[in-house]
Every structure is written in structure tokens, then in C-alpha cells.
Image (tube, rainbow, N blue to C red; front, side):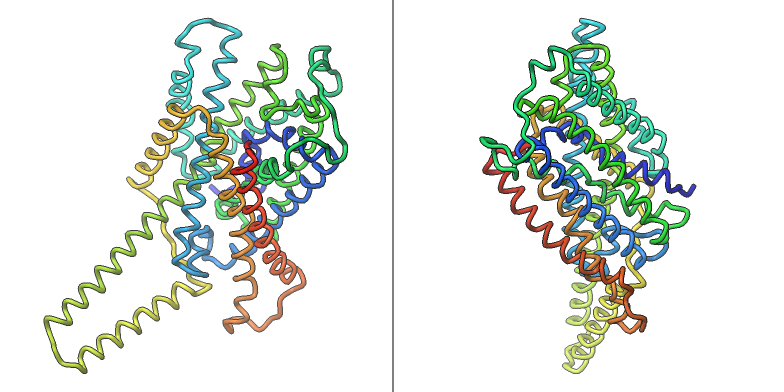
Length: 461
């Protein structure tokens, strides 16, 4: 069943608004309120351009077959495995962080109702949620199948937004006592703003699911899909603006990475914790979906490389055993080079990207492996903030900025250089092409600065 624009917006918005939304107020701390709004807006604009570039370059693939892998085949097939590895690592790491949040919050929720040691056990709660909620949702093949889960998750985000706004507008005496200094410009005595720049970058990252949303749309033309991208980013910006601003103005420089932990124990905060659990639980399949596809592409690439080596080796053995004639050897080499050249042309063709369907046992095995690995890591490791900062500073930025920018700059207008079209680029396509180059440069800058901040300035999110 094809998806509607509404379901596409819900999927992208749900993917973007994960557990990182809890850290958005903390992101304002080293910036101050107004500079924080500026950087939030800038990152939102860059992420929107990245999504628009994905919608545009998807038109260079066969119908409903757009993916990072298929587009990499058009630029340089050998780079596709690197792109998919970055996506798989990023999505796996974020998925694990969601499970850790579940394990940390459910015991706090149940503590209000019971003192039973088993029900308050972190590992027991993770196991139950994985078996009965996360696993069934993760085995769904289409993101459109998760639209109802996304609606529940977005309701949870809306509740969190109301909770933060309410405590900002009507703070209790206990919350007033927790309020620190609020800076409207750049504060003094705070660490470098680079320490929380990754929070703003990660907040909008939904690009790994953009191609799936495009493929599932009833009308997947650029004119239609661009509205899905812009509307989802607009809603995300509004939510981040409200939660980030209200949360920072409520607690000032006493804000912490997870704002929900600052609110006193009450019915409203307990409901807020439940909302967060629902949010991250339903968000895990949105990380599993692209991770599974990328792992499949990596496996396919390795299998294809092995087959190519076997064919070349077989041809060499046959040539050595059947003839010693120099002219025959030269003819065989010439034919082999011609075949490889033809294969290269097919791989580089704008009209014929490689399609690698994922079905049957491989779908089940890869999904099961992702779930089991995520479960084991979440059980064994409680604190992944620093590791996830490294993964996010590299993986999220690559997916949001560098890859869409690279695809856009290389592919937009390529039909003219190949002689397939004589029509000049429209003004909008020219804008997208050069915006793509700027996005790549910005992405490289973010990777270097955010990674340096994470490693040397103690950044985490």
C-alpha cells in the first residue's frame, strides 16, 4: 500500500524527534538563548536542503528504488560500502541508546506503583520491551506500516512540549530554586559552543529514512516529495524552538542533558517519562530499517566482489590450461577488458542503478542479528554518551550533509554532460547544485569541529 504525504511527514518527524529532544535545552547552555536560536535555525535550514537534495537526486534512479546504495553506484560503486557502513553504525548506535533510555526510565515509572524487585529490574524491563514491542515492529518491512506508532510517538512529543512550557510559564517554588543564570547572548565561563553543536545537528537527522519515504509515496515526484521534507522540518523546528527555549529559560545554566530528570516527582512528570518511553520505543524500528538495508548492501557488495574474483581467477586458469598462443592470450585480455568496461558503463549509467532487493531468510536473519546485538549491548553497557557522541558527530553529519551534498553536486545536471539532455538547468536546480557543494563543505567542518569537541572538550549528548 502506497503512503500519503501525511504518513511521510510523520515518519520523518518521528525519526528526527528521538531521545535527543530531551537534550535540546542543554544545547543552549554554552550558546546562550539568542545564539542558540540562530544555530538551531541554521542547522534546520541545512538539514532541509539535505532532504531536498535527496528528493531531487532520487529522480535519477529507477522507479521506487532510491537509496544511498543505488545512488553510490552512479557516482563510484566502490564507495557504496563506505556509505552504508556509516549509516549502519550510526543507526545501530542510536538504536542502542533508545533501549538504554527505556531501561533507565521504566524502573523510575514503576517505582511510583510498586516495590517489587523483579519489576524494578532494568534488564528485565529491557527484555520485556524488546520481545513484545520492539521486535514485532522491527520486523515490519515498510515504514508506512509504522505510521500509527509514529502518531503515538508524536503525541508523546507534544505532551513533553506542553510539560516543558507549563513548568516555564507556571514554575513551582521547587523549580524556581533550581534555576541558574540565564544568558541571552554568549555566556561567560561556559565551555566552547562546539561541545553542544552535535545536539543541534543530531536533532534534525532523519535523512537515512528519506529515500524509503520517497519510495513509498503514491506520487514520488520531486514536486510532491519536497513538501514532505519541508513540512517535517518545519514541525521539528517549532518543537525544538519551544522545548529548547522554554527548558533553557526555566533552568538556565543548571540545565542537564536530560531535562525530564529535573522535574520533581509528580503525576505530570511520571506521564512525561511514560511519553518518552513510548517515543524511543517506537523510534527504534526507524533506526533498524535503514541499518538492516545498509547491512544487506554491504553483504551483497562483498558477495559480488568474491564472485568477480572467482570469475577472473577461473578465466586465468582456463587461459593457462587451454592455450599458450600469445595472440589468443591477447585476445582474451582484450575481451575481458571490454567486458569490464561495459560493466563499468552500466554501473555508472544514470538510468540503471543496481537494485538489490531484501527478502526471505536474509531479511529475517539480519533483523534478528540487529535486535540481538542491540539488546546485548544495552544490557552490558549503561553509559554510551561519549561513544554515541563520536558516532553521531561523524555518522549523523555524513548522512545529513556530506552524502546528500555529494549526490546532489555530482548528479544534478549530469544528464547534460552525458548528452542525454540539451535543456539547461533551471535556476532552482542551479541553486540546489551549488547548495550541495556548500553542504559538503559545511559537513566536513562540522565533522572536524564536533569530533574534536567530543574527544578533547568532553562533549556528550
